[in-house]
Length: 269
Image (cartoon, rainbow, N blue to C red):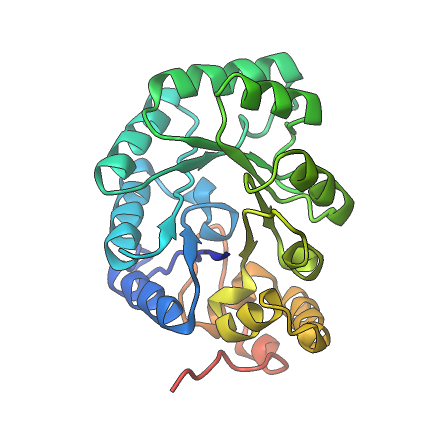
């Protein structure tokens, strides 16, 4: 299954553009994208308030009625995290994803207690997130296995982009691991038992990413070229600029000149 790590569009006033978001989800669905993870790293979770996240979740769940939607519901306040989970569940979410507490490098006992406490209060399956590039606190293999055995976690989104780690996790826990990151897409797509792959580049080039996920490995060079070009042009900001999705402080828009080397977004007509 291919899931898009959704971008969050903003209008000229810096407000979340829900109409643009709905149209984007419908466009991606028509291209064959099978699932969505809104308000995660690509969705600028740190720069959205709880009301905005709830509105985004509601919009995506409504637009993608026949797709898998796993909202990221992290918030500094655990009570707000629970509220976001309850709201997402009421709108039809079958699961949610939650990273460990952000910023501080916490020990495994604290991280385990965090997930146990949330799972006790959230009435929907919880997927952990392992994202060492963005989150100081990481989820060790032994802790993950323990939380799975206890029924605390339904699985994990692994954003390490470490193909060997993903392979090991999938072998130990088939169909419960989502491999996140375009750099690991090719290797992860070939793994028996991977629950799905999560792509940011699918926001702009969904058919290309889907074809690679389905086994057309002759397109691997095209994928790697886009990874390189997007990073050089400004990363997330460049991807949003290509899609005319707008940026909001603290992320400034990229200059138009920086986008000149990027292939245009796909035309699905």
